[in-house]
Amino acid sequence: EVQLVESGGGLVKPGGSLRLSCAASGFTFSNAWMSWVRQAPGKGLEWVGRIKSKVEGVTTDYAAPVKGRFTISRDDSKNMLYLQMNSLKTEDTAVYYCTTESGDGAFDIWGQGTMVTVSS
Amino acid sequence: QSALTQEASVSGTVGQKVTLSCTGNSNDIGNYGVGWYQQNSHGAPKTVMFANSLPSGIPDRFSGSKSGTTASLTISGLQPEDEADYYCSTWDYSLSAWVFGGGTKLTVL
Image (cartoon, rainbow over all chains, first blue to last red; front, side):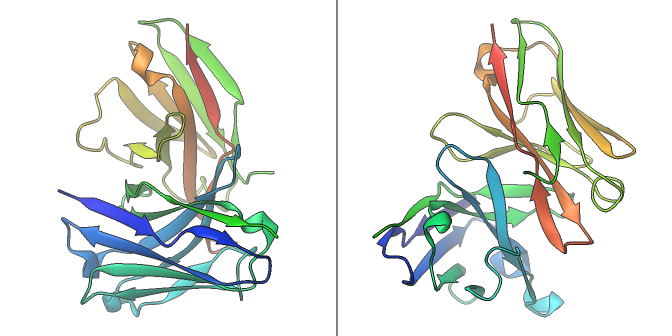
C-alpha cells in the first residue's frame, strides 16, 4: 500500500525548534520529489518547500516565509523525509503534510498530517 | 492573499454539473499544468485531478481543463460525497515555488 506517515508534531515555544519526519512506503521513494505543505487552522493549503531526488541533485526549494529557517532533507536508505524547523514563529502553527510530486503538474500521495503548535 | 484565485463557494444539487475555476497568470497557470485537491472536514487533501489525467480511483465524473491562465474542475453528476473544499495548485517559475488557490467550498444541496 502506498503510504506517507508524518510524525514529530507538538507544542513548541516561539523561537524553538522541531523536526518532523515522514515515513514513505509502497513506492520507490528514492525517485520521488517530495514536498511539505502546511495548513494553518481554518486556512487554506500553503506550500512549504520541496526536495528533489538524488538523480536531480537532491536540490531544495523553499517558500519565502520559511526560507532560512526550515531545512528539508531525506534519507533514501530509510525511505524517510524530514523537515527541520528552527526559529519557529506563532504563524508557523499548522498541520504539516508531506506529499509527493506526481510529475503531471500536481501533488499525488498525501500523508495524514502532523500538528505543530507554536505558542508560549 | 493566495497566488491563485478561486471562488469562495459554489453549490449545486445532486446530479447537477458544477464547474470550479482557478485563475492565475503567465508565470504560473499560463505555463504549467494545474492539479486539484479535495479536502473533507478534518481530513488530509486527496488529489482528484492531475494536470493531464485522472488519478486512479477517482470517478470519471471529475474532469479538468485549462484555457490561458484559468483552469477549471468540472464535476458532472454531483454526489453528496463530493461536498468538500477544493484547492488548485501549480508551479510559479518567477517564485520558484508551488502556489495554491484559496480554496472553494462546494456545497451539495
